[in-house]
Image (cartoon, rainbow, N blue to C red; front, side, top):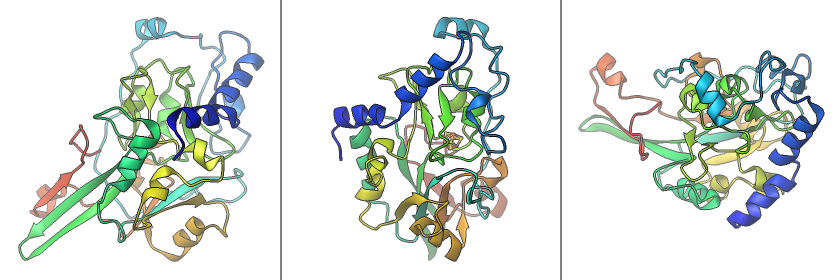
Length: 301
Ligand code: SF4
């Protein structure tokens, strides 16, 4: 792992957040958002995700909260058996980083969660990556399965479309959904909008926070910390638009699922052999199901 100070500077020096926003703010007249519809090439998946940015004022926290009133987006059940149909479409963007999680290999050791915590100095009680345990059935027919979770770096990220300041966006070069803390006003719209509960407000910064696929590491040819730490090699990371990548081959040769495909977000985290049973299935199937999230927020989303 890179030390925190090192990873932060690497993050900003590698064509990352600060460069991006400096370029945007310098090229736009004042009063416009740093992330405009002009970011997206015609026909790209991100085209039109942020609308009417030209007429919006530059907001600070006080202005924003004075003018706010957008409704939060709720959450529903976790479901499976779907794949983000557009995620692997070649030619639309240069790269789309993705993760395949082989749930058959995961044994819930939490090495990924701990590695993520250490990599980003994640405050106590918050998580960028976590593992849920699902226990279900009745003796002697019982099972415990594991479901590692993180931001899905969706191809249609609702967190981006609800952000009023353009502080979060999907990078054209690799499809990673990022947050610029310098532009985030901590309004929590993205936290509420994400159907996967992948975001939180970092109490140390007051800004939205979440997994960024370890940009500071992958930009130097390393794997994300969670991938490197997993002793079972249950997490595989790579470019889904490269047919020769391991993730592309795994997806091509295995039945895969994504979380909540009905949300239309087209996740780029794929699961092999995952049990997506939820406690809400208890009511439907009269089955004992217990989900432990290992998070401060025990409700699964
Ligand atoms: Fe945004 Fe949530 Fe999708 Fe991540 S999982 S890109 S935070 S909507």
